[in-house]
Image 1 (cartoon, helix red, strand yellow):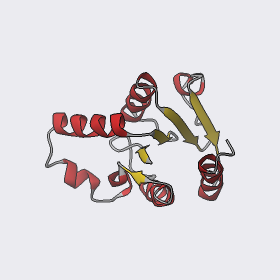
Image 2 (cartoon, rainbow, N blue to C red):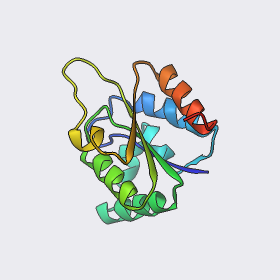
Image 3 (cartoon, rainbow, N blue to C red):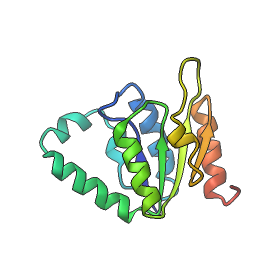
Length: 138
């Protein structure tokens, strides 16, 4: 299985450790095409690429993916775009969201019937939910 993981990059890297944990967990179920999203050296490595090269690489991965898992707590134009493109490509999209005071998920995400949203508080909760997903319980 090919998994596309989406998480904020230019929108903020405060969740990079969480992304790395989720990516490591997802790798138990398939190949995570976007494993770089959880790596600290990501921004330095992408400085060596043009904007067009990044877009073409990521879009090719998105087209090749069997499904998309997006961590949507940190607002990101790129993640929103990836989600919209995944929906247009007919991909299953699962969004993980940590609700907390002062943070609301965009209505374009929470209101979209093509998306499955899972609110969680701790990474272990998201992992348990994903385990159920991959075991066919969801």
